[in-house]
Amino acid sequence: MTEADPDALIDRTENWFVRQGIPHFIDDFTASEDVWTRAAGVLSFIFFCELFLTFGGGIEGVAQFGVFLVGLAVLVGAIGLVNRWRGRSWFARPDTIGAGELALFVLVPPVLALLGGHRDNGGFILVVIANLVFLLVLYVVVSWGLFAMVRWGLEVMTHHLRAVLQLLGRTLPLMLLFSAFLFLNAEIWQVANNFSLPLFAIVIGALVVIGLSFLLGSLSGAIDELRTFRTWEEVGGELEDTPLEGFDVTCFDEDPRRVPLSSAARRNLSLRLLVGLGAQVLLVALLIFIFYTGFGLLTVREDTLLQWTTRTFENEAEIILLRFRIFGDEILLTSLHLIVSGFVAAFSGLQFAVSLVTDNAYRQEFVEESNAEVREALAVRAVYLRLARQQAELA
Image (spheres, rainbow, N blue to C red):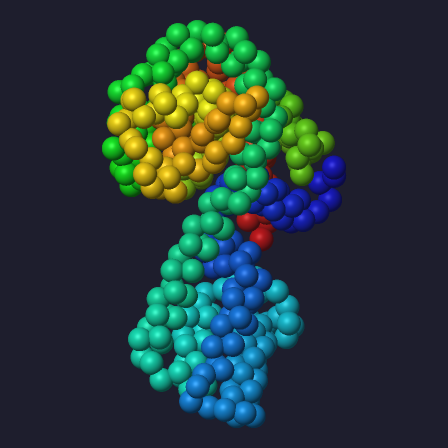
C-alpha cells in the first residue's frame, strides 16, 4: 500500500466501512451522500416497477401504453436533468440525492397511475404511503448497514458452530439436570396447551429482550477499552487485511489515544457487536430447540399428551403436524412439542447470553474474536480520520 493517492485511499476505506456494516464510521456521514446514493439502484428499480400502475381501467389501447412511456420518459429525464444540473454526465451515478429526488420517487408513480385511469383517490394515498414506508425501511437498512451485519452474523454462526457443539457436549449433561425436568413436566405442557400463538410470541420476545439487554449492557465498557491505543505502532499492527494495510502510520505526530466516535458511530458499532453476540446466542437456542424437539418426539407420545393436556385430538389438524412410525411405534409431532421446545430453547439462550457477559471462559472462547474485529475497525477509523483531516487542511 502506498500513500500516493490519499483521496482514493479514503474512498476505499469508506467502502470498507460499508461492507463491514459500520457505515457511520464515515466522517461527516450524511443521508444525501452516504445513504440514498448507495440505494439509487433500488430506488430506480422500484420506480420502474411502479410505472406499471399506469395501466389502469380508465384508458385503453395505445393511450394506456403512451402513459407508461411518459412515465418512463419522466424517470430517464429526471435522472438526466438532475445529473446535468449537478454538473455530471447524463447517466452518471448520482453522488448526492436530496429531498427533490425523493419527492419525485414518492409522488410521480401515483400521479401517473391517475393519468393511466386509476381514479381511486384511496389508491393514490395508499401508493404514497407505501413509498414513504419503503423509503423509511430502506434508510434504516442502508444507513445502519443491516445487510452487511446479517451477513457477518451468519458468518459468525458458521464459524462458531464447532465451538458451540463442543460446548454443548461439555455442558449438556449439566443442562439436562435442569431443563429435562422442565421439559418432562406435565405443567409446562398444560401451559403450552392453553397458550395462543400471540401470547407465546410475547413471552419469547420478552426473553429475547432480556438477553439482548444483558449483552448490550456489557458493550459500553468493552467499546471504551477497545477504542484506546497507546501508540501508532499499535494501530498499525491492526491494519492487516484492510484497505490501509502497509500504510506508514509513523507519519502522524500525536499519539492516537482514544479513537473519536460520534454518538451515531458508537451506536452503529454497538449494534454490530450485538449482532455478532446475538448470532451466537441464536445458534445455541436453535441447537437446543432441535435437540428437544427430537427428544420430545420419542419421549412425549400420544398417550402421554392425552394425560398431561386432557386433549382428545378430535380436530387433529389443529395440533398434529406430522404422524409417522418408527419400528412399529407411532410418533406424533404436534404444535405443543414446538412450543415447549421453544420455551426451553429460549431459556437456554438467555442462560448462554448471561454467561457471555459474566463467565470469563465463555468470553475468551466466543467474544474475544469479535472484539478483535472491532478493534481492527477502530484502528482503521483512527488512521482514516487523520487522513481525512490532512486532506481537508490541504483543500
